Length: 192
Image 1 (cartoon, rainbow, N blue to C red):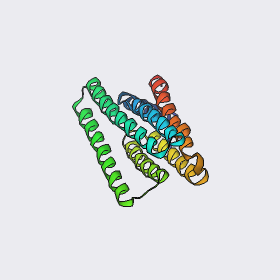
Image 2: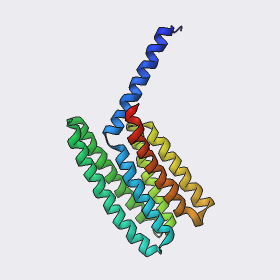
Image 3: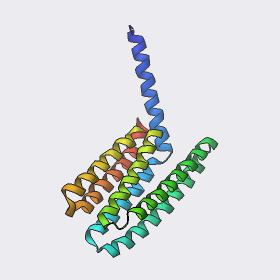
């Protein structure tokens, strides 16, 4: 099949247009704010896990997770009011329900696997969170899949190769990657 230069140019323009629409949809949906919020939570939580005793770190995580859940809910409400589209609101609600269900199943898996040490518990939660990101990436943007796979590889690598620095790696590189990705999306994708 022969493609003329004109057809090739039209195809490239269509791909570019679709890429812009996808990026605008991700930024309009607020993905960058969720990445920054949860990146900060991971950064602070994993720093706490590295520097504080396990019982204290557990309490820090509980407070941070409550802040993250409330912050995510608040962002969802705020973003749904900005968009004013019934199908987007319904989709946002379903995404929220997906994360609630995933969290519930994660807790069931932890309950069955208990007792776990703190690093094993962290890995369980990371695996479930990254699975959720991959699912969202299949729906919204493949760049989220890439990000989730990177953080998963980082988590497994530091868990097995640098166990004494696992929490620090997850704070700086895991949380830092989320924050950096959120900022990149926020400041670069709208300009594309």
